[in-house]
Length: 327
Image (cartoon, rainbow, N blue to C red; front, side, top):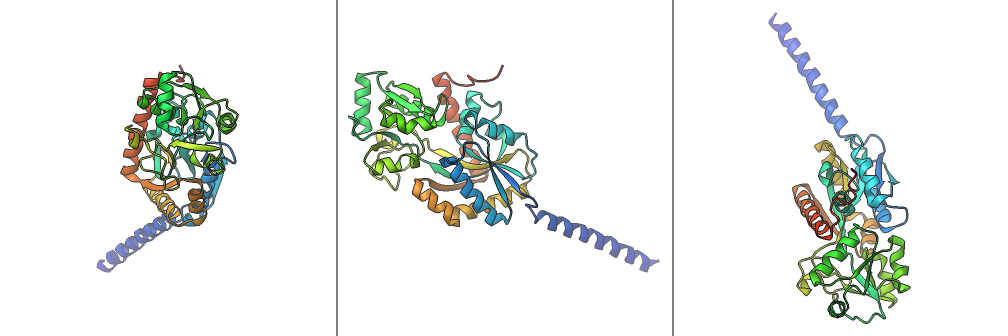
């Protein structure tokens, strides 16, 4: 009888060990199928190209397949809505920009970044204030002095009301205590609008203006980052001007809410390796002036919370907070 009990116990132990082994094996197989990688803006732009390169790096490090899927519209809102409605199984991710903070605070979406799973921040993209090279202002201080003498005379072009660029323009003009005409010109209207003298200045991802700056057609007055840009060490940052403004654009990867920690850990490992050593992405980022700055976990969540609150405060002062909220 005793021998039978030992034999039965051994069988149970064997079965349990096999179940655990299968579970561990299964957990280590993620991803087992292609991962949809939503990109919130159109094909060919900087957000699209950056996202596709990071997706390639993730493929290499995850040993899986990512399928970049452009879902533009409403300042990124359509992609973020789609992400929120997907299953939290790790098979839908989204390439997220700082528009997650602007779209939620203006009311295009009825949720915030906190209703998703922040996987990791990948890079920060400086958003310089740019003017034509023949503009009468050699420095930001020159412009501020002129704008104070001529309030609401000059046009500050931006992508659209409530966009990242618009909020940056609000932040800087408020800090300088000047008034300008905020002119929504769209993504495709920034460069031709500036060169065609329809607007007096604009801002946007730094890479959009590099060729014009190098050709002597445009110049930067200020780059609103925390530190001076390595490519433009002579261009001041807001801190140099006495302003408490830092407003770069984020590139990050998010997943739906409640993705398992095992999957989150796998994704973070792949993204960290991509940010450290995936040559095509690192070369592109360097050439475009992006600042690779990996961040995840509680540090990223704290940073995102501060950024969200900063944008909310700006929108309240500008009378835009939840303005587009559906009734």
